[in-house]
Length: 356
Image (cartoon, rainbow, N blue to C red; front, top):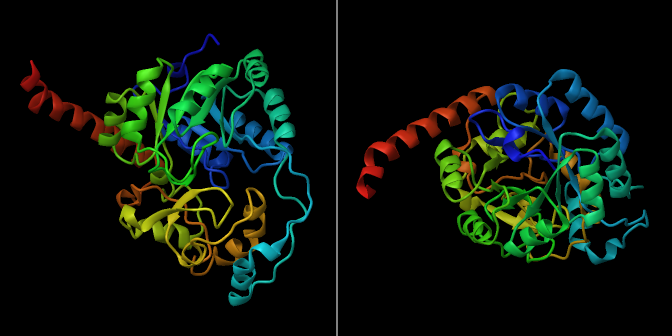
C-alpha cells in the first residue's frame, strides 16, 4: 500500500472513533468525522446490504476518510444450539418475564461481508476476533483498502504483520467491549502500557493504541510509548450525539470506578468488558455457548432491558469509565485537544529541562 496511517488521520489529532458494533452506525461515523475524529463503522453484525447502505450514507455526507470494521468469523450455519447446557439463562428469561424465541440466524456471513467490503472499497478496514489470510489482505490492497488488524498480544500483532496488514490496533486489557484475541488468552491480557512497549520493541509497523484512553493526557502517553494513533470507544459512548439506550447512558454517566467493570462471556460467548449489573453477576462462572450463538440467544433479554433498568443489558465500558463526560462529540474532541496541548506544555516547562 502506498498510503500511510497519517494519510487517514485528522491533521494534528491522531484519534480514531472506535468501531463499536451496534452503536457506531453511519450517523455516528458522520458526527465523529465532523467533530474531528477518524470515523469507524462498526459493521461486524451488519448484513452485507446494510453495510453497503451505511457506507453509501457516509460517503454522501462527508468526503473524509473512514474505516469499516468486521469480525473475522468462521461460517457456523443456522443449526439451533442446545439450551440445555445453559439453564441459568433460561431461568433468567423466566425471572424477567421475557418470552424466548430461538433466532433463525446467529450472525452475518463473514465471507459475504468481506465480498461486500471489497466491492464498496472503503479507504480503511479493520478486523477483530481473528486474522485474515495473506490472500485476503492482498485482495484488500488490490482495492486500495488500508488494512488494520486487532491484536491483544505481541504474537497476534506479528501474525497480522506476517499476512501483510498495514497497521496494528493494540488492544489493552483495559478496553471496553469485546476482546479481539485470537491466539492468546482473552481473559488474561496485557495492560496497554506494557503491550505497546512490547509490540514496539518487535516492529516498526504503525500502531494504534486502544484501551482506557479517555483524556488528552492518555493520548499523549500512548504516543510517547510508541503509538502512531489512538482509538477511543467508551469515552464517546455518553456523548449527546450518540444514541444509546437510556439505562446504558445513565450507567456511564454515574461514573463508576474502573473496578466496577469486569470481563464476562455471559452476554455473547466471547470475553468482553462491561459495567457490573444483574446479568453480568448472574453469569459469573456459568457456562456460555460460543460466540455468536450466546450473543444471539441473549438478544431478547438484553433488548427487554434497554428501556427499563438495564439489569440485563450489556453495558460495555472500559476501565476509564469514571472519566466520562456529558458533552457532544465536537466538545469532547476539543477538550481532548486542549488537554494534549496543556499536558505537552507542562512537560516542556516542568520536566524536560530536568533531562537536558
